[in-house]
Image (tube, rainbow, N blue to C red; front, side):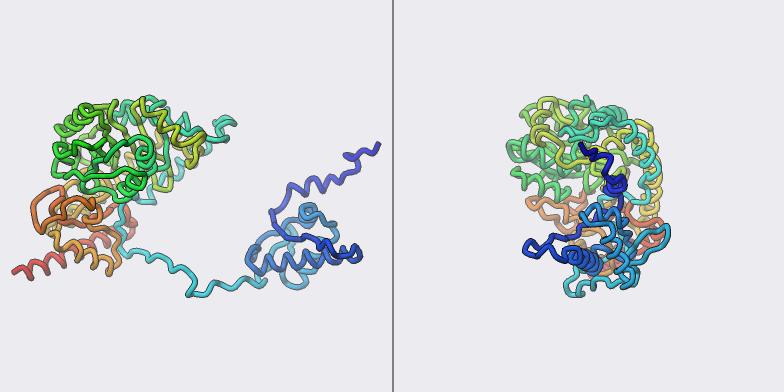
Length: 500
């Protein structure tokens, strides 16, 4: 009996595991004769490599697999592949250097760029970037994230890298339960937590599977949150807000629940008053309704006492949701729902038999970040950084006679202006290269249109310009703030003169 193992080529076995993966279509012509087959294969391989370089699949500098490895991959003789490499080197397509392998030559022909008229124009970069909804990217705790990644990956059992459970990583749910209890006063068992990729995704899950009627929402809020709720089949009705937050006494009787940002109302910045916090819990219990608490900016407080989560007052009727998009980065796609126990199975089943979207590896890293204390340290550093920015913005606007309500927490501010000026300043901001938003952008379509003037501190009857003070780069922040003040005051002075 022939010993196949003894007669096999050890190098071929190794070569099959080496080199860059490279797809080359070398299917032989079945109608061709066997005579001259070797020459045809050599010509086919050379043509395929030239085509891959020519169309950009092999850009200049790309290292090709060793010829023995490529020979094993495509089923050709090593001598054939070696001869093709030498041929393309002679033609200038490839270069070979000792210790560097064979690479695509820098002088090799490269694909022509797309015609200018067919290319998508790049989005303009703001001159003064006060975009909302994001922390300053320079604050991301890179060193801590790398250290936590190393620890989490090394400590994770093999099964952690299999299909994820739809409820999310058990280690992160345990870490979050402890953190939310300690930092936000949330009453939660890890089994009550369902992990998602974003608050928007969480609202979609609730809309499709939990809400059974119209949902009340604050008259001003994130439009894409309203949109995802309505796309999932739940109608929304607005409730007015004032200096005490949402006016609970005006909630519709037929609403199945209400979505609130009680710690820091978006965008006006006011917290829900203690009286109304108790009132909305009573309203929910009396009508077998639900309160959805979006803990927007709950951790980023500056000069006020911590406001605990609304969920602690009514864990039986409050669904608490939050994410790390403001505390860490919107690039880290991790959010959570803390559910009353009777809703957990419904929401988990709605996600399917395995986690469909989230990265379980990132969840393991965040768990380590929390457990190691690095997350708390990052939050404290961030508060100090944004507090200094808030103080600079507030002081500069005060010099111009403008006050800022609702800025004891969070990453944005509403600069009050007459409602009639809001669209005018918004258009001027666009011309001058500002990224910001008019307050009207966040108004529910069914909410009353703001009247000109008015004195409502929450902004529901006055205009406003909403700016994210966390976004500008450190090197341009002072200049950006000066330009913002000039933008607002120029139009206020012009309007005052016209009024006279």
